[in-house]
Length: 498
Ligand SMILES: Cc1cc2nc3c(=O)[nH]c(=O)nc-3n(C[C@H](O)[C@H](O)[C@H](O)COP(=O)(O)O)c2cc1C
Image (cartoon, rainbow, N blue to C red):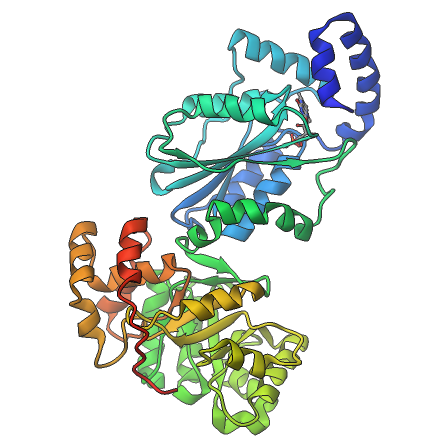
């Protein structure tokens, strides 16, 4: 089916009719099986996809898809950026034949009589960025999407358009789209993904889609925006929450309550280590929340670390951590710090992944590219996470940039500067000013900066008020200028020697 041809031929009459007839014959079989029933199935799908619990806070992908091509792209965008997702559905399904649908759509467009869509549109209040996609129809925005745009107030939103097509009509699509979202605060860079004729929506693998989308995601800064949601996608394929509870210095009894409180407040990431001596308490806290039906095991992401005293028996220590935690897998396990034999420890963690005991692995307290390369040399898995001292006065952006090539995320212990330095961070003029401006506490400004800067942060506390306060950072966003003001506080000053 060649749509470019179809469109021009439709315009010049008789010849067009002949082509339509020929194309209709070609289209019939390939499209029939792909056309979704836009009523119930799609509705159930969308219901599953947008739930309050999963809401990421700042980005949503809204799309219309007639034969699932756009759907496959939309889903992947949501997966890689952590955005929420919503599918526009028409009240009345279009015919399964592409050319009948084309006739109807052209009539809808000509008369301005746009199709009715299912009335459960997402409330955009909590989103700053709305990524909007749909198929190109006769060189324009598809009429169901046009209807959505007519019904939706996008003022104050950044709107990022994408489409899928068979290769024609992109510039007129974009023009049409821009006219329909005129009230948006900003329209980001547009991307069209071209599907071959006689396509099917699984034409492209996830890797191929990622490759096609990467420059667009990068130019619209969708990845850094995605960490303003609650999770980030690791290079291991698992999602990791961006705010977690640090548990250093808490004993088993204390930590059990802190973990339980944190989970009740919404935390889904808990950080411990063999060295902290509290893995048992962490496991108990998680189990208490599971027993009360607050979460399931798979909802909580638990990190632990191999301590230097175990470097000569690292693999065995994975089993010991599992036993203390009382889990059958560890979400993330790190080499605690550099030390003799740490390359072998990292390899033992790789083995732990191969054996299904660990899902993601990483390192902690490695501050330079050379150190990262040394400890991971010869291993077949790149670190998903590097957990380091990282705060206002020590922002290791050089390392962050370096490990981007591996898709590695930096996680900050001591996100406030650590014991003895917290009040200096909280009372910093810039932070105090921003706290007033955003009506938040200094701690919340710093943590918000951490996640917007692309870091995962694990503030430690056993005080229920602080635990709750530290998690309450998903209802606001620091502007780019304010982010820059905080970036400027960096003086590459570390306080610990790990
Ligand atoms: C009514 C209709 C009109 C279309 N018009 C065009 C077009 O102008 N240019 C193009 O390249 N593809 C056109 N196509 C092909 C679709 O844009 C393309 O297959 C798209 O990926 C389908 O997305 P979907 O599966 O999400 O509906 C058209 C398809 C239909 C059904």
